Amino acid sequence: MTSVSKPICIDNDLPSDETSSPATSLDLWIGTGREYHDVPKLVSNELSRRLSISAASRSLLPPDHISIMQLVHYQPPHLSEANQFHTPSSYFSATLPNTDCGYLCNHPIPRHDFLNKLRGSSGQAMLDGKVLIQHWATSGIYLPFEALSFWVLLIDICDSHRIWISAKRWLETHFTASHNTLPGVASFRHFRSNWHKATAHLELPRFVHLPAVCFLYYIPAANITLSNNTLKLELTTQFFKTIYKPLADLKPLILKGIKELGSRKETTNTDN
Image 1 (cartoon, rainbow, N blue to C red):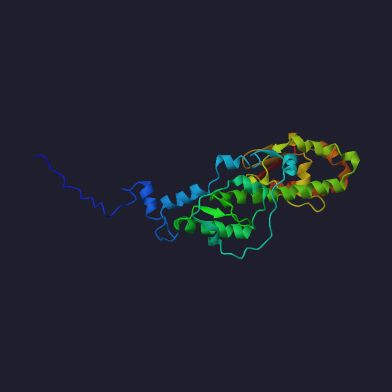
Image 2: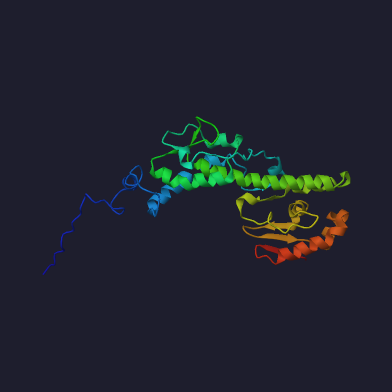
Protein backbone atom coordinates (compact mmCIF):
# COMPACT_ATOMS: atom_id res chain seq x y z
CA MET A 1 0.00 0.00 0.00
CA THR A 2 1.29 3.42 -0.91
CA SER A 3 1.35 5.87 1.97
CA VAL A 4 0.08 9.36 1.42
CA SER A 5 1.76 12.29 3.18
CA LYS A 6 -0.40 14.77 4.98
CA PRO A 7 -0.77 18.07 3.11
CA ILE A 8 1.40 20.97 4.27
CA CYS A 9 -0.49 24.16 5.03
CA ILE A 10 1.28 27.47 4.34
CA ASP A 11 -0.25 30.63 5.74
CA ASN A 12 0.68 33.34 3.27
CA ASP A 13 -0.37 35.99 5.78
CA LEU A 14 2.55 35.13 8.08
CA PRO A 15 5.78 35.55 6.06
CA SER A 16 9.01 34.34 7.66
CA ASP A 17 12.69 34.92 6.94
CA GLU A 18 12.83 31.46 5.39
CA THR A 19 9.95 31.97 2.92
CA SER A 20 10.38 35.67 2.18
CA SER A 21 12.78 37.23 -0.28
CA PRO A 22 15.57 39.35 1.23
CA ALA A 23 13.90 42.53 0.00
CA THR A 24 10.59 41.56 1.57
CA SER A 25 12.26 40.65 4.86
CA LEU A 26 14.09 43.97 5.03
CA ASP A 27 10.83 45.74 4.28
CA LEU A 28 9.47 44.22 7.47
CA TRP A 29 12.21 45.98 9.44
CA ILE A 30 13.06 49.22 7.68
CA GLY A 31 10.61 52.08 8.07
CA THR A 32 8.23 50.10 10.28
CA GLY A 33 9.04 51.63 13.67
CA ARG A 34 11.36 48.82 14.76
CA GLU A 35 14.29 49.27 17.15
CA TYR A 36 17.82 48.16 16.30
CA HIS A 37 18.07 45.59 19.08
CA ASP A 38 18.64 41.86 18.68
CA VAL A 39 18.06 42.20 14.95
CA PRO A 40 18.31 39.18 12.61
CA LYS A 41 21.49 38.63 10.62
CA LEU A 42 19.76 39.83 7.48
CA VAL A 43 19.38 43.29 9.01
CA SER A 44 22.88 43.49 10.52
CA ASN A 45 24.35 42.37 7.20
CA GLU A 46 22.50 45.17 5.45
CA LEU A 47 24.00 47.70 7.86
CA SER A 48 27.47 46.24 7.26
CA ARG A 49 26.90 46.53 3.53
CA ARG A 50 25.96 50.20 3.83
CA LEU A 51 28.95 50.95 6.04
CA SER A 52 31.47 49.08 3.87
CA ILE A 53 33.86 51.23 1.84
CA SER A 54 33.54 50.87 -1.91
CA ALA A 55 36.54 50.14 -4.12
CA ALA A 56 36.26 53.61 -5.63
CA SER A 57 36.39 55.27 -2.21
CA ARG A 58 39.24 53.07 -0.99
CA SER A 59 41.30 54.09 -4.01
CA LEU A 60 41.29 57.64 -2.62
CA LEU A 61 43.35 56.52 0.40
CA PRO A 62 47.07 55.68 0.53
CA PRO A 63 47.81 52.16 -0.80
CA ASP A 64 48.05 49.10 1.43
CA HIS A 65 51.85 49.16 1.25
CA ILE A 66 53.42 52.56 1.63
CA SER A 67 56.94 53.68 2.47
CA ILE A 68 57.61 55.82 5.51
CA MET A 69 58.61 58.78 3.36
CA GLN A 70 55.49 58.47 1.22
CA LEU A 71 53.37 58.55 4.36
CA VAL A 72 55.30 61.56 5.67
CA HIS A 73 54.65 63.49 2.45
CA TYR A 74 50.98 62.51 2.30
CA GLN A 75 48.72 65.34 3.42
CA PRO A 76 45.73 63.96 5.37
CA PRO A 77 42.80 66.21 6.25
CA HIS A 78 42.77 68.06 9.54
CA LEU A 79 41.35 66.29 12.59
CA SER A 80 38.88 68.71 14.15
CA GLU A 81 38.67 69.35 17.88
CA ALA A 82 35.30 71.10 17.63
CA ASN A 83 32.54 69.84 19.89
CA GLN A 84 29.20 68.81 18.42
CA PHE A 85 26.07 69.76 20.31
CA HIS A 86 23.44 68.19 18.05
CA THR A 87 22.26 64.65 18.68
CA PRO A 88 23.89 62.04 16.40
CA SER A 89 20.51 60.94 15.06
CA SER A 90 19.84 64.44 13.70
CA TYR A 91 22.63 64.02 11.13
CA PHE A 92 20.89 61.14 9.34
CA SER A 93 18.40 61.87 6.58
CA ALA A 94 16.22 60.19 3.97
CA THR A 95 17.45 62.60 1.30
CA LEU A 96 19.46 60.95 -1.47
CA PRO A 97 23.28 61.41 -1.28
CA ASN A 98 24.73 64.20 -3.42
CA THR A 99 28.44 63.84 -2.55
CA ASP A 100 30.96 60.98 -2.50
CA CYS A 101 33.83 60.27 -0.10
CA GLY A 102 36.29 62.23 -2.20
CA TYR A 103 34.93 65.35 -0.49
CA LEU A 104 36.13 64.02 2.87
CA CYS A 105 39.78 63.91 1.78
CA ASN A 106 39.97 67.71 1.79
CA HIS A 107 37.77 68.64 4.73
CA PRO A 108 38.15 68.30 8.51
CA ILE A 109 37.48 64.95 10.16
CA PRO A 110 35.04 64.87 13.10
CA ARG A 111 36.28 64.09 16.59
CA HIS A 112 36.73 60.40 17.28
CA ASP A 113 34.24 60.34 20.15
CA PHE A 114 31.56 62.02 18.04
CA LEU A 115 32.26 59.66 15.14
CA ASN A 116 31.75 56.71 17.47
CA LYS A 117 28.36 58.14 18.43
CA LEU A 118 27.40 58.50 14.78
CA ARG A 119 28.41 54.92 14.05
CA GLY A 120 26.49 53.74 17.10
CA SER A 121 23.37 55.48 15.81
CA SER A 122 23.64 54.19 12.24
CA GLY A 123 21.70 50.96 12.85
CA GLN A 124 18.65 52.72 14.24
CA ALA A 125 18.90 55.37 11.53
CA MET A 126 18.76 52.65 8.88
CA LEU A 127 15.66 51.11 10.44
CA ASP A 128 14.09 54.57 10.56
CA GLY A 129 14.44 54.74 6.79
CA LYS A 130 17.46 57.06 6.66
CA VAL A 131 19.79 56.45 3.72
CA LEU A 132 22.54 59.04 4.20
CA ILE A 133 24.38 61.19 6.67
CA GLN A 134 24.69 64.95 6.50
CA HIS A 135 28.24 66.27 6.69
CA TRP A 136 28.91 67.16 10.30
CA ALA A 137 30.29 70.65 9.52
CA THR A 138 28.95 71.64 6.08
CA SER A 139 25.27 72.09 5.35
CA GLY A 140 23.90 70.77 2.08
CA ILE A 141 26.47 67.96 1.83
CA TYR A 142 24.86 64.52 2.02
CA LEU A 143 26.98 61.37 2.03
CA PRO A 144 26.31 57.62 1.97
CA PHE A 145 26.72 55.58 5.15
CA GLU A 146 30.20 54.47 4.04
CA ALA A 147 31.45 57.95 4.97
CA LEU A 148 31.40 56.82 8.61
CA SER A 149 33.88 54.02 7.87
CA PHE A 150 35.91 56.27 5.59
CA TRP A 151 36.37 58.74 8.44
CA VAL A 152 37.60 55.94 10.70
CA LEU A 153 40.36 55.09 8.23
CA LEU A 154 41.25 58.76 7.84
CA ILE A 155 41.67 59.08 11.61
CA ASP A 156 44.02 56.09 11.68
CA ILE A 157 46.03 57.56 8.82
CA CYS A 158 46.23 60.92 10.63
CA ASP A 159 47.48 59.23 13.80
CA SER A 160 50.17 57.34 11.91
CA HIS A 161 51.15 60.44 9.94
CA ARG A 162 51.45 62.51 13.11
CA ILE A 163 53.77 59.98 14.78
CA TRP A 164 56.10 59.69 11.79
CA ILE A 165 56.20 63.47 11.31
CA SER A 166 57.26 63.76 14.95
CA ALA A 167 59.95 61.14 14.39
CA LYS A 168 61.22 62.93 11.30
CA ARG A 169 61.49 66.20 13.21
CA TRP A 170 63.38 64.42 15.98
CA LEU A 171 65.88 63.08 13.45
CA GLU A 172 66.33 66.48 11.84
CA THR A 173 67.01 67.97 15.27
CA HIS A 174 69.45 65.34 16.56
CA PHE A 175 71.50 64.55 13.45
CA THR A 176 73.98 66.90 11.80
CA ALA A 177 74.45 67.45 8.09
CA SER A 178 77.28 64.88 8.07
CA HIS A 179 74.71 62.17 8.62
CA ASN A 180 72.21 63.33 6.01
CA THR A 181 72.80 60.26 3.83
CA LEU A 182 71.07 57.99 6.33
CA PRO A 183 67.43 59.13 5.88
CA GLY A 184 67.63 57.94 2.29
CA VAL A 185 67.30 54.32 3.36
CA ALA A 186 63.73 54.96 4.42
CA SER A 187 62.68 56.23 1.02
CA PHE A 188 62.71 52.76 -0.52
CA ARG A 189 61.77 50.63 2.48
CA HIS A 190 58.13 49.58 2.18
CA PHE A 191 55.94 48.06 4.87
CA ARG A 192 52.48 48.53 6.24
CA SER A 193 51.87 51.64 8.26
CA ASN A 194 50.17 51.26 11.62
CA TRP A 195 46.69 52.27 10.46
CA HIS A 196 46.32 48.82 8.92
CA LYS A 197 46.69 47.28 12.40
CA ALA A 198 48.64 44.38 10.86
CA THR A 199 51.93 45.11 12.60
CA ALA A 200 53.10 46.52 15.88
CA HIS A 201 56.07 48.54 14.66
CA LEU A 202 54.66 51.79 16.06
CA GLU A 203 53.93 50.13 19.37
CA LEU A 204 57.55 49.24 20.14
CA PRO A 205 59.13 50.28 23.46
CA ARG A 206 60.02 53.93 23.74
CA PHE A 207 63.77 54.21 24.21
CA VAL A 208 64.80 56.83 26.73
CA HIS A 209 66.54 59.12 24.23
CA LEU A 210 65.56 57.48 20.98
CA PRO A 211 61.87 57.10 20.07
CA ALA A 212 61.12 53.70 18.60
CA VAL A 213 59.86 55.19 15.36
CA CYS A 214 63.20 56.95 14.84
CA PHE A 215 65.01 53.73 15.63
CA LEU A 216 63.09 51.90 12.91
CA TYR A 217 63.48 54.81 10.53
CA TYR A 218 67.22 54.18 10.35
CA ILE A 219 67.19 50.39 9.99
CA PRO A 220 68.15 49.47 6.41
CA ALA A 221 65.58 47.57 4.37
CA ALA A 222 67.82 44.49 4.32
CA ASN A 223 67.54 44.23 8.09
CA ILE A 224 63.74 44.11 8.19
CA THR A 225 61.51 41.21 7.23
CA LEU A 226 57.76 41.71 7.44
CA SER A 227 55.05 39.09 7.22
CA ASN A 228 51.35 39.45 8.03
CA ASN A 229 51.81 39.79 11.79
CA THR A 230 55.55 39.56 12.35
CA LEU A 231 58.26 42.18 12.36
CA LYS A 232 61.68 40.52 12.26
CA LEU A 233 64.76 42.61 13.04
CA GLU A 234 68.20 41.33 12.12
CA LEU A 235 70.71 43.57 13.87
CA THR A 236 74.41 42.77 14.07
CA THR A 237 77.43 44.42 15.62
CA GLN A 238 78.34 45.77 12.19
CA PHE A 239 74.94 47.44 12.05
CA PHE A 240 75.74 49.50 15.14
CA LYS A 241 79.19 50.41 13.85
CA THR A 242 77.89 51.70 10.53
CA ILE A 243 74.54 53.21 11.50
CA TYR A 244 74.78 54.13 15.16
CA LYS A 245 78.39 55.24 15.47
CA PRO A 246 77.23 58.81 16.24
CA LEU A 247 75.03 57.35 18.99
CA ALA A 248 77.51 55.03 20.69
CA ASP A 249 76.32 56.08 24.13
CA LEU A 250 72.81 54.92 23.28
CA LYS A 251 73.84 51.41 22.27
CA PRO A 252 72.99 49.85 25.70
CA LEU A 253 69.52 51.40 25.55
CA ILE A 254 68.96 50.11 22.03
CA LEU A 255 70.15 46.62 22.96
CA LYS A 256 67.81 46.64 25.93
CA GLY A 257 64.94 47.61 23.66
CA ILE A 258 65.78 44.85 21.20
CA LYS A 259 65.83 42.31 24.02
CA GLU A 260 62.37 43.46 25.07
CA LEU A 261 61.16 43.14 21.49
CA GLY A 262 62.33 39.54 21.42
CA SER A 263 60.05 38.70 24.33
CA ARG A 264 56.94 39.83 22.45
CA LYS A 265 55.05 37.22 20.53
CA GLU A 266 54.33 39.54 17.62
CA THR A 267 57.99 40.45 17.14
CA THR A 268 60.98 38.23 16.42
CA ASN A 269 64.57 39.33 16.87
CA THR A 270 67.78 37.59 15.77
CA ASP A 271 71.37 38.57 16.27
CA ASN A 272 73.01 36.41 13.61
